[in-house]
Figure 1 (tube, rainbow, N blue to C red):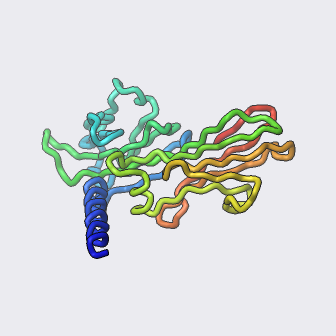
Figure 2 (figure 1 turned 60 degrees about the vertical axis):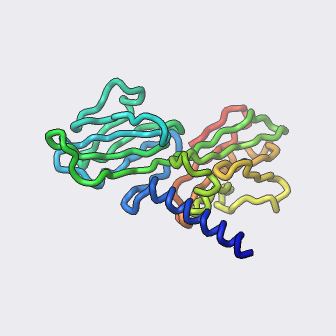
Figure 3 (figure 1 turned 180 degrees about the horizontal axis):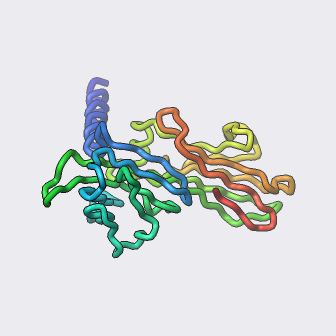
Length: 234
């Protein structure tokens, strides 16, 4: 028993050090639904933004992409048209996609010398997809949190950061398997699916996937049923 406890303790220490290496005490954690606009703060900015550089990493092992340099936007990157700076040097991203998740770092350079500590923002994107939908047939909705901690397993991240994904109905009541109409499953810790059979009275019914971080609601994505086959995600 003592050996097992020792191994558990070593595992917790390793996970804590890994998360600390990825996320410092002054880092910001932003949760947003796909399709929405988001603002990422730059907490080390100098006035005027002429010293501000923003870089982006989708994965820890990928090369950093420079989005802004000296307050000027790089136009040779794929998503440059969706990017802008506010007067306080925060980064705006329009119509966020699941591919936008990752770490964003705001840096300050003067005469080629970096000043101040980097300001890092972790962007997490909530996205819902579904199978085809028709009256009388079953539909499965998939809600996934695209996270920005690629070196940490999703299960470890959710447990350590107390992140929770769940489905609610229009009244805001949490859906569970205790209701025989719904089948809720989590094939992966960052994915939760909702399966049900569509009834005629479900037209315009809304189900919502929500994510909480340390018991605080961060963002949600709704799915509105359209019996005609058209579906709306917002």
